[in-house]
Image (cartoon, rainbow, N blue to C red; front, side, top):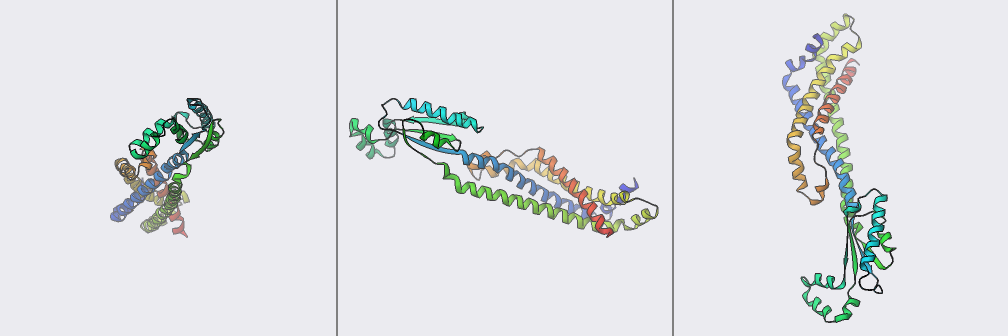
Length: 296
């Protein structure tokens, strides 16, 4: 009981310092939690952007009319099997066969003059307008080669690299988030160590008496560790409450920035407990370190 009263002495003598320190710890922990959520949440977004593509397979002119369905079935089987090999869901792959008349009909709304010219060729239009099969969705990296190997496909092209610059930016953002988290952890630990050293002066007389009474090193460390623990827990509690109350709103604001961020997972309520435990851990560690340095 005496050790607990001794540990809480800084809260009685320097209340504002402890409160401001707790608020600062809570704010930094909340920012670290946000950065951690961003770093982890961008991982599935990057994976989706890397796998999403549209493959256009052009049908050979020698292929008889109506055989596009057979080619489409072969492509569906080949790409689906490849997707299962790499652990992807074949149900997310959309395959659509587009004939020459369907292609011309798609042009009608935007290029009516061109449509009329193509239709003026009559039966020869099928030789001019290409037939193709569109394969879209989350596709494995080898999907393009599999499509090219299908009999009846004259050529194939992919839009795989269309998001390359965005993926590069997201990867850089993840690294920046990691560096900032590390910097925040060092700043938190350093700040609480200095606070612990300042609080040690408030314990100095009592610890000297305890040393004379034969107290061991563990008991001498307890007041400083508990004092720093209370500050860490106070900061962790502030961060946990802020996360539980504002993380959903903050995530909504981020999702509104870009449709590409829609794939990020929603913030977990369990993160609030992690922030609380992190505050307690950093507080205890800084109290022990500050006590050892104070003795030196």
